[in-house]
Length: 352
Image (cartoon, rainbow, N blue to C red; front, side, top):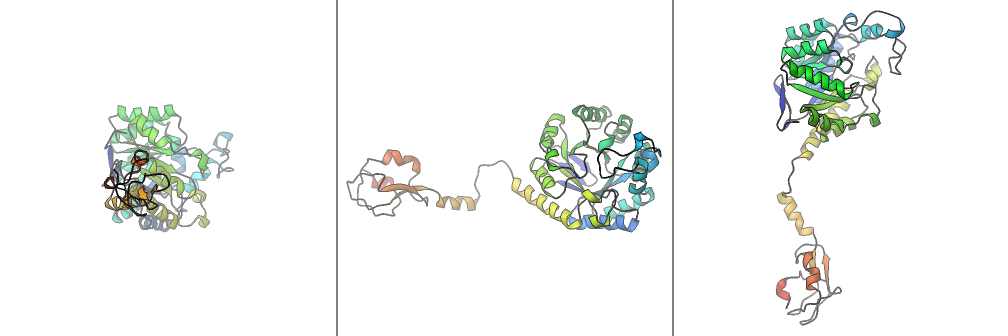
């Protein structure tokens, strides 16, 4: 990634030198209840999210109402046994809710954006003046859709959960062909929940280098560890699904975070950000003081004037008030100028 590269989403900057942009994905966790969707947005604010994300589609804009084998879900997912259309009937977020949910998020001081799944959804989001557009993992190969999104000129966020390298290259190229350099690439693993061993977080800094883009993580794994670890590898955006309670069920509940878990994740991310710091070999004032507890050369046995320094009467020990240990071999065999008591820090003034 280019040094200092930042992208503005609404009133916030995402990228180098900024806090990690934490996004709460509402997805299907509203369970077709507007008040629940609003409650999730409120919980996101309380948990420390910077933004909430919606999904803008209907069952008919994303797939066909068809029961043949092509439309059966049989990939070994938590949704196996139903059709795409039936799944999306329960999962979609009614469009009439979305302006109200966006207003609520904004009033709470968060950004709100969405994933469009067809051209009508892009137009709808444009009418709402959403500050960013996220291309879901399964849409990264929808080139006409990506081209239409890119032309709007707002930031484009790509999830890469089913993408080969050439898919990412093509998507980024299409954006840039349309004059849009505001690209964020999210490492993603499109299994639900995602096994830890399949996450490959090392891709995050690699994508930043290869594509000169801001990068982050769209995380479907359980717990906070993967998301927090991604920040140490350079993730500038972290997205996790949020629900009020996994026990309430729903299409996405099994891999969603509950509010207290989300809050802990944000807290841990902020700790890691502080701990990452900067590349420096300077010491703080406290660290400088702590150097007194380092090693140095001390007299460990009473020495008479004229007596030779030996391994028996001088040693490298803590604390660090004596001579530097690098002089140890040089001093062995030399003679003491005066009597020296055990416990005395060694100094050149005692050496003939």
